[in-house]
Structure formats: structure tokens, C-alpha cells
Amino acid sequence: MAEHCADLDVIIPCIDLQDGRAVQLVRGRKLRLAVEDVFGLLDRFRDYPLLHVIDLDAAMGRGSNARLISQLCRRAPMRVRVGGGIRTAARAERILAAGAEKVIIGSAAFQNGGVNHAFLSRLVKQVGKKRIIVAVDTQGGRILVRGWQEKLRLTPENVFPELESYASEFLCTYVDAEGTMRGTSLRWFRQLRNTTRLPITAAGGIRSAREVRELERLGMNAAVGMALYLNRLR
Image (cartoon, rainbow, N blue to C red; front, side, top):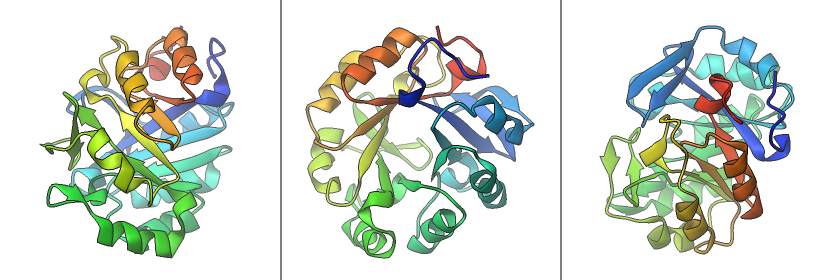
């Protein structure tokens, strides 16, 4: 059952997949909870217009939930955006063909400490800029890649101008607060809002309707995980 304390149009529930289960991790590392009935979440989140599905195994190079993701895309009553370990244009095309609205590109958008222009150019040519979201996830202000295991020297401000040519929007996770249920940093997202003209979906520690409303005032959607799973988005 969907939460009704905040605008459903700006909240995006997240299904993070690991070993065929929907999980919630603290800062991408410590397992906090796991849901075996992944398809049951589609009914639970049915009132929301958008859904994020992230393959954590693929993101960390430890396997794949590709078949499950294809099934989720086909069954979902809402528009689905899929990320996690998408490193080739062919993989992106398969996900989109399965029914995803957009693909979320994270680590593959970066190479040798900078923007991976060659890959992103190929991807735009294959699937079109409108179907690409680039994930720019940070901890301590610096960008994380490889399943949040590697920290680059780059900051979002360094790369947004280059990445804008390849994306329709950005997904920005404040990893410092991810899964902690302590609230996110609205100050951080205000700062990000001033550094790019593209739409931003905020993620990472969002736990209250107040935060969702503040992000909405900034023109941002809010991707929410733990607070929805624990029914604590108040």
C-alpha cells in the first residue's frame, strides 16, 4: 500500500536486487533487510508512477539478475527505470526492449578518472539521449563507482557539463546517508541543483514527507528505499 503523506508523483520506490531478493543496504554495504517476494513489491508500489530497479550484483560484478529484471519490467504497472552493471549498449538495448522506460548508467559513464565519452557517445547513438539517466553518486562530495566501492577524485560539478550531452537527467545518491534512516542532506541537493540544467532525482537517506516536499520545491523527484520498506515515510 502506497504512502499518502507526500506527493506520489515525485516519490520513486526502489527495488535493489541481490541474489534474487529485494534488499536494502546501509551505505551500499551492510544488509539491513531483504524481501523474498520481489513481485509482491509491484503491487505494494502500484500507486506510484515510476519505479527504480537496480541490479546490485551486476553493479558489483558478482552476477546478474537480468531475467528477474526483465520479468519485473514486463509485469510492472508503472514506468520502470533500470540500472546496475549496464556496461554495454547491447545490454541497455535488451533492458529497454524488455519494457524499461530508461536505463541508469553509473560506473560505465566514467573511465580513467574522467568521463567515458566513447561509451556514452555509442550509447546515445544506439538508444537515444532521452532514454539515458546517468547516476552521479557521491560520498564526501566525491563520485563513487564500481558498486560504490571506488571513489574518484571527481565531484558532480566537475562532470555535469560534460555528461549533460549524453543524458536526459541525473540520478544523484547521497551515499553518506544511504540506508541510515537519519535523513538526507537538503543542503547538498540545493548545491547540486545550481550546477546543472538537467532534471535530478535525489536519493540517499530520504525518510520524511518534509524532505520530499523540499526536494519537490527544488524540482527534484525523490527515490526512496528504506523509509518505504519500513513504512516510516512520515
